[in-house]
Every structure is written in structure tokens, then in C-alpha cells.
Length: 131
Image (cartoon, rainbow, N blue to C red):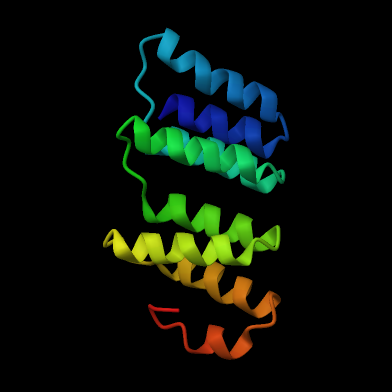
């Protein structure tokens, strides 16, 4: 929890490089990276427009066997819509549903906001779980 809080704080302060360095140092110090740490750095990347880095981290998370949570997917869906990568965002929504991860109000908000901003208002209104 200590590392994830530090990574999150550094990210919110715009100190992305330091957050990433701390994330990488965790293994050297014998700490296991959990979904909280991954999500903190993925969120940092997504909010500063580094979606490709966020997606690479998502893949690394999967490779290391770390649980990808509804929060992980929500961060990516929101970030992809913000970069107008709408089809990718929708694929992550489908992937989340296919994995049996239950959407939260925040994930529905990310989906509906993204659809509305991309001009798909009718689709957003009908997105009660599926798309």
C-alpha cells in the first residue's frame, strides 16, 4: 500500500518519471507489485496522455499474473476514449465483460461519457451492460 500511495501521489503531482522509477524499483527491494501499484501507474500514464505506455503496463500486468480489476479496465476505457481511440475502448469493455468482471457505476460512466463524446448518444443510452 505504501508504494501504491507514493506512485499515485507522484503521478497526481505530474512526476511521471519518478512514479515509473519507483514502480520499477519495487522488485529490486523485494516488494511484489499488486493491482493497486499497477493501477496507480496505469492511471498516471493515462492521465498524462501516455496511453501506449499504459497499455504496455496492462499487458505486463497480465504476463506477471496480477489481477486486472474493474478499476484497471475503467482507467483504460476512459483514457482511450479521451484520445479518440474509441474502438479500442470498446474492445476493452467487451474484454472486461467477457472475463466476468462486473462493471461499476464509474465504468458505466466512462463508457457512456466516451460514447456521447464520440457522437454515439443513442448507443450510450442503450448500454446497460452490453454495447
